[in-house]
Length: 401
Image 1 (cartoon, rainbow, N blue to C red):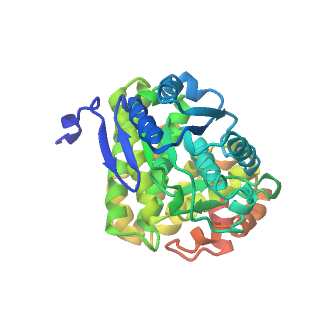
Image 2 (image 1 turned 60 degrees about the vertical axis):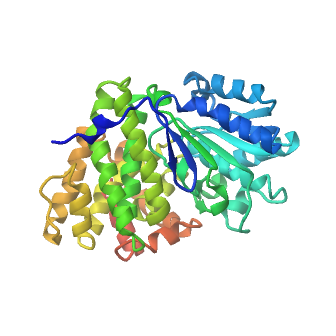
């Protein structure tokens, strides 16, 4: 089989132009020096850095970023309390810090959570009268944000290349998604060398997130040939390189192509949007904030495939072929497709069901209600390729138990 990937020098940093300018490749973190100079020349002399507590330092990213900021006389303040499934309370706290400091831009260092929280803060710095809750309950429509630089530390979210962000409103068990043109990162850095320290579970879950992004983007009612093309490539790369990264976490080539898959997956769902698995996962991690988003998606995916295969059999047979062989573009293969996806998940050591994570039959009604009540999720369900009734959603949850 022809292996085009061997023609790629993973140590050569490329510029990939999406709506954001992405510096991509091993060693790309050094591009923060160029970005800092650009910002200093523009008069951006103070920034807020958004991160979790550990990864931004343990990966070595912070050493490079801090030096670049100091070398260019850019003052900084660091909000390092972003958690998985970031909350609107944390966004409010960080925005207050940023306003008081006088931050003129946001730098995010981490996976999807710091990136999404940072995008949200970038909006609130332009709208000081608003809050995280008013943003995520759609009480205003932002058209401005301060510039965002997204330094990505995981190969899953794709948030560094698109206009989406997610946060949880804890008191309501809501986990809405927003999408605004003003929060495309101006610059993004995807450096696979920063990802070799991901734990085995993180490695699996973030890559499965990327697969879910493109399955949904290729099968929504707004899917295009572009989203189908990207979906096939993402699934092929994840199918090929995830086992290699699991076997050897330090495999830089594997991390490179998983990172590329995640990045183009982010572009894919920026275009084709999302539907069932994300709309149904958000209530799971809203109810259990420590629950891994990628794990929730993995658990739901086989049942979602079972639901949508008859409506999108040709597309799914094509994009899933790298991980599920022998599918036809016929509804008679529905069970084969669902079981095939579950077998692939088991092959990468993610056989989990919702019951394994503490969910029970008694949770199905509340989860279903949240899928329809949470701001923005009804919009995702509305572009699913099958009619997303409450009964259909409840069936997906039950089949995932």
